[in-house]
Image 1 (cartoon, one colour):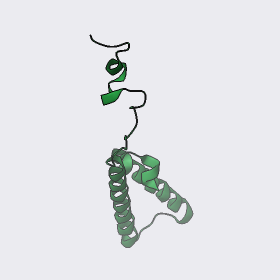
Image 2: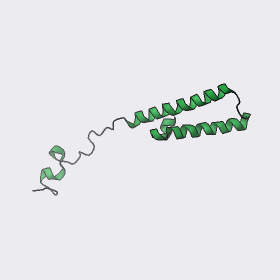
Image 3: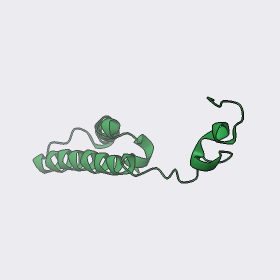
Image 4: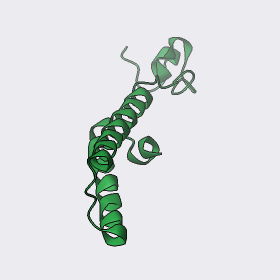
Length: 93
């Protein structure tokens, strides 16, 4: 979900930290300051895991090849040289 929202790998840590900060504010308002060491360990571990996985998914999506087969070749002559191949405007002869 986070990787779909952010769409850029370098912003994943910022968004994950913001999400977890909002969660911490909700916890503080609902049940007070968490004093358990286990709670903080799980909290920090899940923040790091969320940021790393979201960044990995964003990088994976950014590195996918963009299909361009057939785009930009319509209306071009043989060899894909536009009007120049047909002797129309833009010829260099």
